[in-house]
Length: 359
Length: 164
Image (cartoon, rainbow over all chains, first blue to last red; front, side):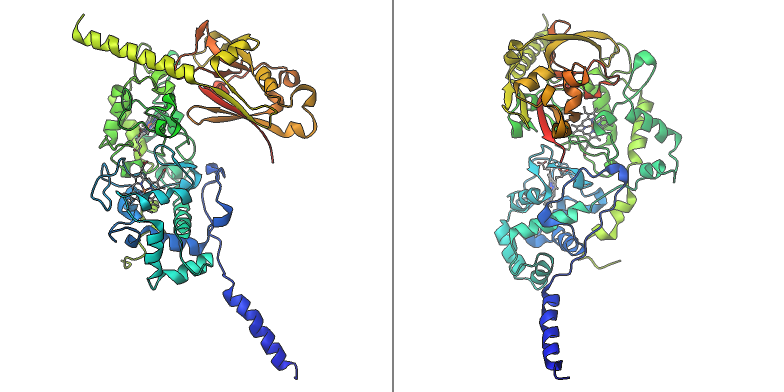
């Protein structure tokens, strides 16, 4: 075997490629076909098991804040479907945030993030809370430096992204990968669609009211909620003024981004999945309960100039000005909203704090 | 007058002023696979050839809508209509977008009056009055469709794209 040494050399040479080549496993995003594939994942940040695992650690990592005390998870708690139970959240400065924290669910399908849609794509979005002085208050460069000094992170970033030094860009990429996996589609409502369970009579009535617009001339009663919050994901990426203020002054919403007067007081129509877990409600967290939300749509909204046309024209009574649902109809809609709570989502160990010892 | 009714009146005037100002400032853009991208104001629309149609809205009642035929606007932008609507141009589509972000799609062939024989209107008035806030200043009206889900209110933009 005079070729033996040569062969060994060759094997060693080749295997060195094998070792440095990063073996990553594509992450399989699972969701009902009804959700559709109207989403884009950036080509330079495809979702991998390893990237998602790193993103999950970063999501719970307080080192990303100037005080080493605040993580994304501080304001986006799994038990609250990744929202905050406070009206306004508290970050490193102790000053409340400007708006109510948002639930992080099914963001794979959202292009324009935040209440006013100002951030395009999850990678770009993450820069905002990381750097904001009232949220995590630390530059991406400072975060990258802190992580580089730990024992844990350099090798993880090396494995996921093939980089020798951690950068801010890769922090946001890993976070985005984790956030894309936060899919909720297993509520009693979803199971009822698959025929695995049936809704109670009240929930069923509430569902019909939620889905239908009123047409008193034909004897049809409805809450018309699905006109905005409809579709399989119970959200649409549109911006509406739902009459919270007569003219929005303190927070102009979408108008702050577009400078268009017609966008005054318009905010994104968010998903109502897990809505029973995400109180308080609306961009400023003004409503503490779903009862207050229903009272708003039924009795109190302002006829602001930009009030959504749909809210202006939906009446259950032929001469009514507002929705005009009865109190038992409002209760039915709330009963339906409670069927949107996905308990498997808020207890899914894959989304929980990886640094907490397993119970 | 009681103080509350004065307040209401003043409020009403304020809202009216606000509304007119905002509606006048609105434009309709035409972009994408066109020779000349356009940004049209309400008065630009008045200068084009006017068309009227009668159609049933969601309220089930007939209304007279006036405005400009969608074909005329697309022609002004130099979209491939009429004789040019063949070959690969038949894989073009139009995305119409509303102020709230709502989008609907048409194949380019179905919106070309010469091709499909139908009139789609970019309306700016209904029953002789300008479209109200929340609906106007521009709205798509498609008289021969049974469900008005593509009659988008607050029409903001028309974009022609190739299906890739």
